[in-house]
Each structure stands twice: as C-alpha cells, then as structure tokens.
Length: 492
Image (cartoon, rainbow, N blue to C red):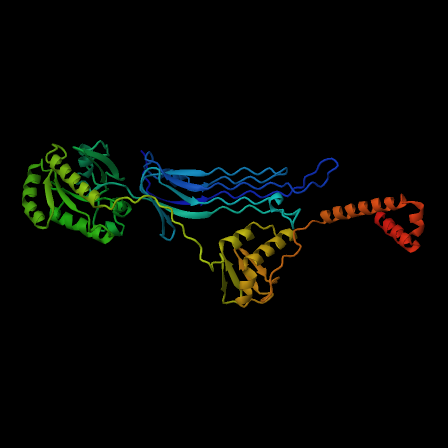
C-alpha cells in the first residue's frame, strides 16, 4: 500500500564553488611566462519544480537530505573548472515551501512552476583573472564560495475546486467514486480514508476537481483524529460540500448536529468562512434515511443551505448535485482576478547605498554586514599574506574602513565580517584619500627586471670598449674606474 505523506522537513545543501588555481606558465627558455591559473567552477543549485505526475512527498520522507554537486577547481594553462550539476527536485502541485519558523518562501501551483531554493556557490578566480597592470603575477587565487545550506518544510495542499467534508463513514469516498474516475478505498468502518483522494468531474462543458478529505470529528482542528493533518487540503477549495449520513445508527447523531460540529471545526481552523456551501444528504436509498432527510431539509434551507438528497448506491440526485457544484465553481473562476503577465521588476540601488552596513555591538565590537564583504571573506585564503592584503585593499576601496572610522572604531577593536573576526588595523585614516599599496607584486618579476638591467649595462660596457682610441683617451680615468667597478658588482 502506497503511503501518503503531505509534510516533510527537507535539508538542502547547494554545491560549493571550486577553488581558483595558482599557476605560472613555463616552457623552455621561458621559465616565467606569466600567470595562467584557471577559475573554479560554480556549484550546483537546488530547485523545486511542479510535476503533475507526482502526488505525494513520500520520497523526501525517506531521503530528506538533498545535496547538489560541487564545482571543480581550476587548473593551469588557463583551464577553468567544470560547473556543478544543478539538482531539480520534482514536487506535487500545490506544494508550499516554508522555513522552520513558518515563513512562506514559495507557493508552487501549476505544472512547471519552479523555485530555486538553494543557490550554488561561485567559483573562485584563478591568478590569471586576478592579474592587472599593477599586480602582474598574483601569487594567490580566490577560494570557492560555499553553497547555500538551509532546512525547509514542504507542505502539500491539494489543488481542488470542491472539497467533500463530513464525519467518518458519511459516504464521501463512495460519492467521489461514482461522480469521477477516482477509486478510493471503501469499507464499512470509520476512518477508511487515510489520505485525500482527488477526482476529476465533467459536467457538460465544465470540468473541475473534487477532493475527498478524511473524516472529521469534534476537536479535529486541535489535533484529534486525522482532521488537523488534512484540513489544509480544503484551503484551496472554492466550494465545500457537507456530506451527511442520514442513516447512521450512532446514538446522539443527527444531520443538524453533524453540520454544526463540522462548521465549528472549519471556523476554528480559519480562512474558510467565505466559501459557498452545499449539503448532500447521503444514503436516502435507506427508508429511514429518506425520512430523516425530509425532516431536516426545511431547517437546513432556512439556514441558507442548498440541500440535495443523494445516494451513492443508486446514484439518485447526483446529477443535480454535480450541476450545482459546476455552477459555483464557474462563479468562483469568473470572480477570480485575471492572471497578470510576468513582469520584470528593476529596483536600482539608491545613490547612497554602499552595499553594506556597520553595526556597533554592546561589547564594543563592530559587525559588517553585506553580500560583497561577506563573500570576499569566504573566498580569501588567510594562510596567504598576499591574499589577505588583496582583501584589505578591496574592503578599503569599498569604503568599509572609512565607515568603521566614522562609526567610532579604534585600532585593535574587534570587527566581524561573516564568520570571521579581526583585530582592526586600519590602512585608511579619516580625511586621507586611499592610495593602494604595492600588494600583489611578485619578487620574481623584480629579479627578472634586475637581470634585464644588468644585460643593458653589459652591452653598454662592450660598446665603450669598441670606441676609437682618441675617445678612450679623452674619457676621464675616474669615470672608467667607476664603470668597471659597477659592472663587476653586477656580475657578482
């Protein structure tokens, strides 16, 4: 027997970005050809998409941990790492995505509706991408950004036009089995229906769906019976039909009391007061059932209900009931606001929006919050001094140090950015313009430059030795001695 699950907690982990590569191009007679480290690939994202073929959240009940692929790291010769494969999770129509605190993130209604729940991390840049005119050969690369990690609650709310509500064994499953092609389990004991059943009903040119909700009892809205678990499946219904058993043998039961009890539970659950109601007095094929229906009909009509005498066994009155359902469903559809076309909303940043904020904490520390600073910290290798200097330059250019100084931060104060804590040692002081230092240079470039200078001086020395004899005699002796000394020193 297939188990129906309509609420699960899902643990999602998007893929981490791959690390950038630190590499120097080398070949014969060209040992230092410049940086050629490739970028890391982006991590895979986790998305939810509505699939009409999926009707339950059962798969996530047994496998609640979802993880996308990580991005691959970059390599030398300017080879970028591969991106991680995105993970697409198929969910039933009507799935609501919430946080553990109950905040609704997305309401997935309609086939193909997609929601990106967890975004993959960005890949780190290699040293080839970090090179510029000032930093010709970076000796560091960026780390991959970690992917999003979160826990969400998936809650299924059936998408149906009509909901059948009533006490256990009132005949709801029998009713939906004869007005649609649904084949629910039917038996002569209470709580036969343990899961909502959906059926499609066609009346002339009208088509609508009907949901058979498990039986409700007094206290269902507070957790008794199965009602609390499945009352959510009538939230989307445009019409509610009270299915009343007129042939029950239980003492103390009568149609009016049953309807009052169900209405009290619906009212306590909330959000269903504006739905039109119909009353189906079921099992009128039984003589006592027809007599009781004739007695209670005037009282129900006086309350404003439209009442129908029906029998799932003989199909008596089902045509009139389904036509009434179709009429109310069409009225609800016409009253619904038209679907608006998809619009792209562009929200430009404010002129004074720096992209981060600084909060002074009670303990005297400061917290920097912002997408860019926090991402930069995650992508920094703190074991590399050059990478740390690059981060400091970026934060200074963004204005973090200037705002820290204005917020009252002093050298040595504790500053938090993301998950990292620093003892602040400012490089920017109030009233002074920031001038980037020589971070990001490579000593090998300086050695190469020195070698080039030595070669130039050697060529100049050879040129002097080839001068005519008269020029050599005219040259000052002190100058010649100085040149010789410099050349000898260079060669050493």
